[in-house]
Length: 93
Image (tube, rainbow, N blue to C red; front, side, top):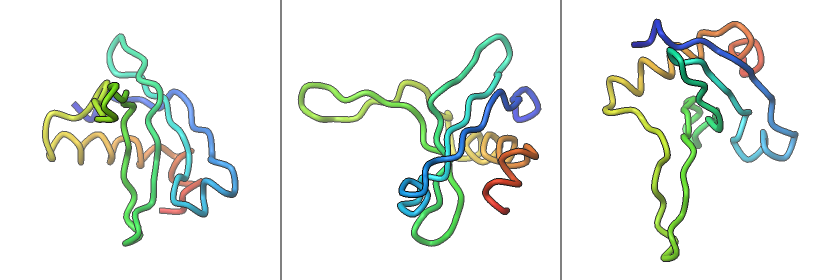
């Protein structure tokens, strides 16, 4: 699966976003799909992670629009995106 993911675009967050841990936004090709709205974040512990687009219902609960099926898939997807030269250069892996 990780080999099917290709970086489409990377946009660095503004200085305030970066200070708060939101490093930037990615869009990827996955087969015949374009997945937009993924964010690259640095956790409080200093680890990189992806956040996926979500919506909120009228009770304020979050519902992901797309997401990995499990932890293994999450790690493969993150590695494929973080290995992309543009993202790696920007976030200084």
